[in-house]
Length: 152
Image (tube, rainbow, N blue to C red; front, side, top):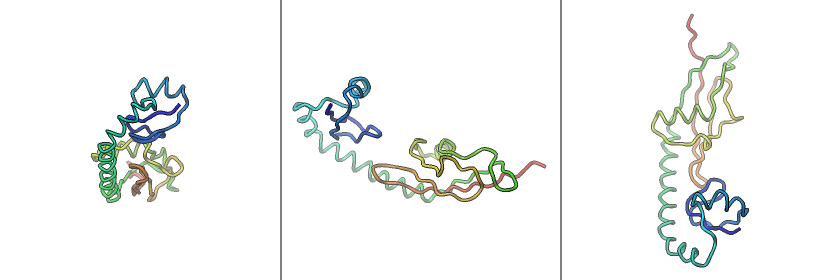
């Protein structure tokens, strides 16, 4: 079934895109949530009238992502975690941990946009973590994991 996206849908496309999707997916999920409209002549005409506004929003998102990329790459996240003598952590640092720390610092980034190498950091050291922002924009975040001082 051909549909026109009313808003950005992760894994499908951006507002204004025309996509071919399974009819059950459209009928049971996308249409009830008003994420898409059916691909018809009337809806295409509406899309063409809205095209300028859609392009402006896309450009705003792109410039916002570039600004966010610069700010994120200037950040360095430090974590003090309990670790064994060989540097292996008792626990791990994952995308949810990073998302919570970024939120504490004032960034609103979904945890699914944070790509931790091997899904979790399980040792002390310095790591590079990718954060997908918008379209093909990505930021590389520096994460430092140190052994926590033990209470002796």
